[in-house]
Amino acid sequence: MTTQAASIPRTIQHLHALRQVIRNDIFEVVFQPMAGGRMLRLRHVDHGDVLVPLHDEDIDLDRWPKAGAFPLFPFHNRLRDAVFQNDGKTIRLEPNSANGKDVLHGPAHRRPWSVTELGPAHIEMSMDYRADDEWPFDFRATQRFELHQDRLIIRLGLTNTGSTVMPGGIGWHPYFRHSTDEQIRITAQWQWDPFGLGGLSEAGKHNLRTMVTSIPSDTAQHYSGWTKATVRINGGATTTLLGDDALSCLTALQTSQYLCLEPTSHVAGALERLPDACPETGMRLLQPGASLSGTVSLSIS
Image (cartoon, rainbow, N blue to C red; front, side, top):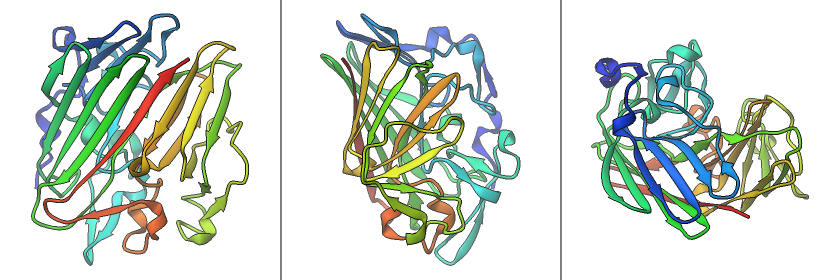
């Protein structure tokens, strides 16, 4: 089996002409479909860049920059040793070159996407993936972005287009602007320790009885049963994320350069725990022809 991305240049340059832009009176959103279906910029009329802006010349598909936003298909976060179990078989993936022997965030953000629908305030992109060494299953992934007055609606979809059962999930990975005066609020039911001794067993999750109001620097935090996440920067605009039941998990990571709030369909580490991942992890086993879809909204106030 060969890796289909081998013929795609790893560093994307001179692609400005292939950018796509949607806008309304409040937002302007810039995309680069050829570079993994990425969002390059999200600008607000009053508050400027909401995300860390990403420039075409900075995009390296092997070592992605920490800016903009990209899709997470068909899994997210780190798969240690690039190996998991499926239908009684051991599946070994080709590791990302930037992650040693591990693989991170699936292959979709390293492949070109096609624009299937475009209007002044909406865009839809898709990718038909063919099984290779980075993921041995066929699937179709879709992203749809719609501007509705003061909010951006993001719709994600995954369909198993192969002939065997496929584990899979969906998610979105934005890099929000960071400041030293951030106020974070996350409402969720559970917090997980996906790489602890308890793995993803009942011992690996903890009931959250209060709202999360801070997260440690440089350490990813994993939640499930989340309903709302907000961040306020420098006492100014408040960015609010709301996810539906299909995107019931959230990863949060704060550094000195950015803040990630990543809505996903499953908890980090769920893939490597198959076939024993408990149902609460959100990991799906998609029959041939089966689909998974979810929606998240982003607003600024």
